[in-house]
Image (tube, rainbow over all chains, first blue to last red; front, side, top):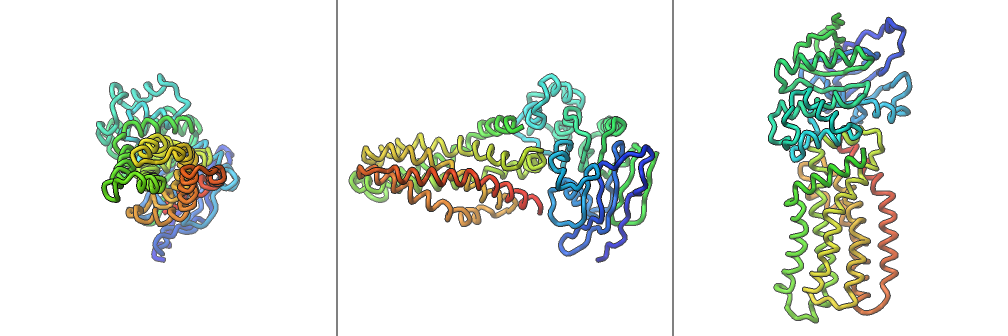
Length: 226
Length: 220
C-alpha cells in the first residue's frame, strides 16, 4: 500500500451546468498485490480534453482499460451520462473510439482495407479523404506492413476523421509521429473537444493544448491550463 | 460491422493461403502414409479407412484452431472487436464461420479422394461427406472456446488440445461409426441425427462461452 497519495481531478460542477459524460467513483486498481490507485473520483464533461498522467507503472493504461470495460481487476463504479455503466454499455460502446497501444492495423491489408473494416459505414471517397488528411495520399493501396511505424500509426489515426464518435480514448497517440504530425493532431483533438466531444489521452509529449490532467501516483499536480 | 468483419477475415485468409493449406496438407499426408505403414492390403485398409480419415480430419481442424484469434490478439484488433457495440458472440460466430470455410469445408471436399485412395467401400462415401459437412462446424465452434481461453498464453498450443479434445470425442465416435454403418450397408441416420443435435447445441452454447473466454483472456 505504498501508493496511497493519489490525486483526483477537480470534481467541481461544470460552468455550463452540464451533466458529466463519464464519471468514476471510488476506483481502485490492484495489480500483483500492489494498489496502483484507490479512491479515485472524477467527472469528465463534454468538451474536456483529459490527460491521464503519471510516471511509468502508475496505472495509466490500467485506468484506460478499466474505463473501456476490458479490465476485471478493479473496484468502484463507472457512470456514463449519469447512469451506471453496466446498463449503458451498448450506448457507451457505440459512442466510443479507442486507439490503443496496439493499433489493430493488419499488415497484410492495405491502408484503405484496414479503414474499411474499422469504419464500415464510410464511403471509399471518405476513406481516401481521411488518408489524405493524415498524409498518406498515394499510400492507400500499399499493404501496411510495407509502411513505416509512423505511417502505420497514421493509418489508425485516420479513424479520427471517419467515425463520428463523441468519446475518444487515445493511448499514446503521438508515438512515432513527427513534429508537424503532432501539432496537426493537437488541432484535431482541440476541434473535437470544441465540437462537444470528450477526449481522454495519455502521452509523454508536452501538449500545447488546454488540458485537464488526471495525475496518478507521483506528487500533486492539478493544472487546468486554459 | 459484422459483414465488414467477414469480408476482412476472408481477405486476410486469402492473403495468407500458406498458413491455411498447412492443415489440409497434414490431412492428406496422414491419410496417405497409412497404406505405407500398415499394409497395402485393400481389405484391411478399407476396414480402417473411416477411422483414419476422421482422425486425420479432427487433428487437421485442431491444428488450425490456433490461428482463429491469435493474429487479432497480437495486433490489437481483438480489443477493437470486443469494444464494438454488437455482442461479442456475433463476432465469434463470424470468426467461426470463416474458420470453417477455410479449414473445415475443404476437408469435406478432399475426404472422398482419400476414401478412394484407402479403398473405402462404396456405401461409405455418402456418410463420410455428410458427417464431415455436419460435424466440421461443430469442431470449429468448440475450438473457438479453446482458442479463446488460450489466446493470451504463450504456450497455449499444448493446453488447447487438452481442453477441447474431450468435447471432440463424441463427434469422432458418432462420425466414424456413421461411416462404418454406411460401409456395412445399415442405416446411419441415427448417427447423423446425433451429429446434428450436437451441432445445434454447440451453435447455441459455444459462441457465448468463447466470447466470455475472450473477455477473460483480454482482462489480464
